[in-house]
Length: 345
Image (cartoon, rainbow, N blue to C red; front, side, top):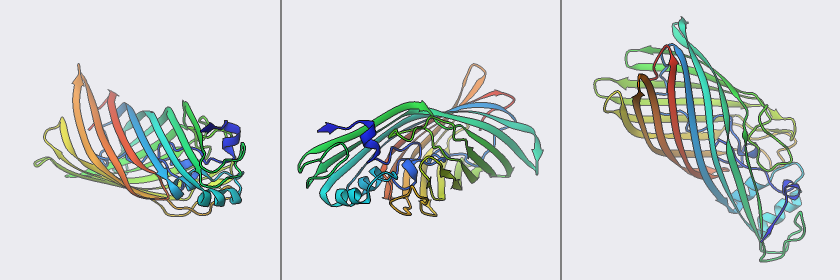
């Protein structure tokens, strides 16, 4: 096995995933909207006040065969001839790992607008991501860094620990009886850690915006909750690579049983699908569209530290039916506390 340096790797690798769940449709497998971030109480808006929260995300996934090939290749410098040769004359397997935290500060205004509570916030992601790609030659390949002869294996890898792009959010929420609904927006500001020559970067190097509508039905008498949150992400072009990720659709849902105001358990899931294919001069592999679904258990627990209420949510999701995407497992931990003026639901 031979390890190749970053300069040679750049000619071969697409790069690594970030918080989207990993992929090879969408540039570098990155999505501004983190799948699985919305689950129980999706349509709820907290009372007026300031809130601090931490969202921890762990993800691991693998891909093999044509899936790994499409994921590992795609930079403008990649030769179509090399890609074709790898498809026929090599066995390729990719593995990706992500561990990140999204810290946020939110403010819900005391005054109502259009009958609903308005809020604003800023999110700052930081963390670790890594990628390993193993290529085993079936026939001799003319590979960057030297020929790869039949039966030999080459590993290409990279890792980073850095700040990602900050995001601005705004939302407005209403409620009537057992129904609670909310409209939210996210705007990605491309100033996080990014280098075109690196295999993995925490930043996107592109502007993007997401619009999500959330609805929660909660019956206090039975403790039954149903939540759903569909949304669409619109992506700008990465000026460093001339790659434009397609428009992305996502929908998340949760069904929960609340046993008290402090404890609930249930199931959550999501479905992701690109509505339009990737485009631009950098999308040398064509207009790929990704798709994946996931499901898993969700638990929420509220408690107090002294007089400070704390909201927590833990969930695990297993991905399946992936198309033009990696499939893996994700774990989520949310912790939210009020800084004054309210208490989280």
